[in-house]
Image (cartoon, rainbow, N blue to C red; front, top):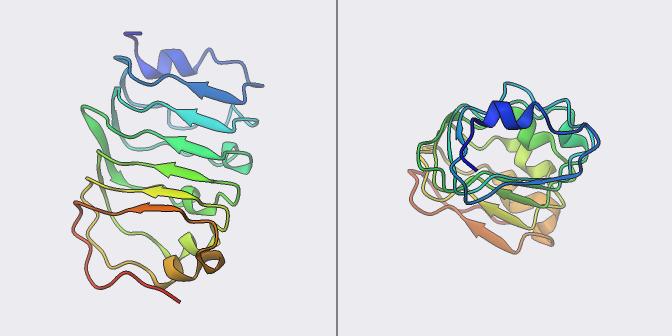
Length: 158
């Protein structure tokens, strides 16, 4: 697929639960909002040519379990939207291999269902919040990759 991301995402039916379009040549910015997809459980667009800011997934995050926009040739920039940290059903969050900046807020402690958390190869330059070590007693987290960033301090634990 060689198409603009906005053009593709504007024609997806609102009842879609899984959208997977990895390893293509989909380019450009994602739309500012993906709120027209309220039943979305999986959003996977890894290994494309997406860029710009990550969109607001506010309504989709009610049901979203997997978000993977890793390995973009151009890369997402800017901070991770705060709504990502409010997604209580999120199990897989893979934002690796982009150019994301900013911090990981204490809200990460709300992600009790999170099993895979990959922020490797970005430009995040903060300390890790203590809540990362306390989220759900770490029971669900199986994969944590924070490599190749500019984190300071220590990896927190309870």
